[in-house]
Image (cartoon, rainbow, N blue to C red; front, side, top):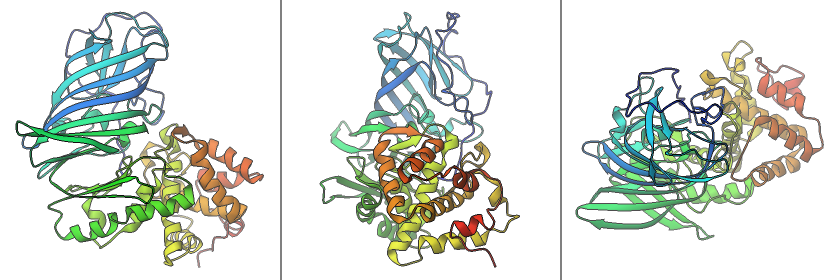
Amino acid sequence: MHRRFIVPSALAATLLLAIPAAAAPGTVGAPGIGDPYYPASGNGGYDVAHYDLRLKYQPTTDLLEGTATILATTTQELSRFNLDFGLDVSEVRVNGRKARFATSGDHELEVTPAEKLAKGRAVSVVVRYAGKPSELKINGWTAWARTPDGGVAAQEPESAVWWYPSNDHPLDKATYDVSVSVPDGTQAISNGVLQSQSSKLGWTRFNWRSDKPQATYLTTLAVGKFDITTDRTADGLPVLNAYSKDLGANAGAARASIERTTEVAEWLTEVFGPYPYNALGGYVPNVTSGFALETQTRPFYSPKQFANGANVSVVVHEIAHQWYGNSVSVDGWKDIWINEGFARYSQWLWSEKEGEGTAQELADYTYAQHPADDPFWKVKPGDPGPDNQFDIAVYDRGALALQALRNEVGDEVFFELLKGWPTEHAHGNANVDDFVRYAERVSGKPLAALFDTWLYQPSRPAAPAATDAGLAEAA
């Protein structure tokens, strides 16, 4: 993914009900989860286990109506807690009883339950809401894309705020049931497995389920008119791909790429180990954006990804994220290299497999393309800062670090590392330091200096560092 979303520090918000009475010290959940890149992202005081979203969407008006049921456990005593959300809320219930609520900042929904919640308590929160997601602007833009026949929620690092209330940070992953009612003749695509589909009174309801932990930004919704293909992998996993009916000249290239998803996933299991989920696929809505995103089990692709013809490489990138970024998620957004460096390197490995240039040749080429005074080398993939979180250097310099690691430890250990990491941290979170320690433990080699050179120094690694890493100097 190549776009970032900045949470502004202050934006006027409409007060929905009276502001809750002052809570006792130490019993108010924090309005952020503690990520220094995005201080307002996520919330403190609870851990979500499951989201049940029951939605109705009218494509002609962009009206989304929803009831979200959130199942969580308190991690502290709570007299008040926050959810991240931007649409208009009509009612909140906590454990079945009406709760007071108000808004603050640009997407904070403050909830005061009827009685204080004890630490370690199972909690259900029901939020009823409605609104037009495309009209919700934060920092001047929306993560909800209108299409000629519907709408799409797909963005990084935040998109949930536009369509359901949540604890919006990768540190709090959960399972999902997403049920969406749309006018007959229209489809609703989401993550995981389609459990059922039924029509009544001119509306069709689609029920989707993701049964493995999923970060909020990896949850997607696409409503429109799609051509849908289905299949099963050799292991029996359901495969569902969806293409807007109005992709124009990009339609053929999109299909030629995404219909190879099963092949790509099977190859990646040889590189990264067993596929971590129970469904596979991808979708291409008619949007004007240019990025792709690793939405869990069913990546989102913009039509522009296929403007120059088939682009299997982007499919490799997004499917690789299912291991690196989705199953093993970041601790904080500064750890983005764990996502993007590995996904980019998987593209290099695919090129190597396809006979279109080895990973070493691509590393040499990338290194040579950027002289010492190129700003590319100022970006530190191990901690790029929020302004550079999706800079090309995080991807390409991040992949260079992996090629340097491969050359240092040898192929046998390197590919053992690639398989072992997503197994050891399956469905969890980790940071860059965790990977460095893991690589040192498995390889038996001191690697801190290597990672410091390639991930943290704001300069082009010169000889002997480049030579030691097997990278050719620029002519």
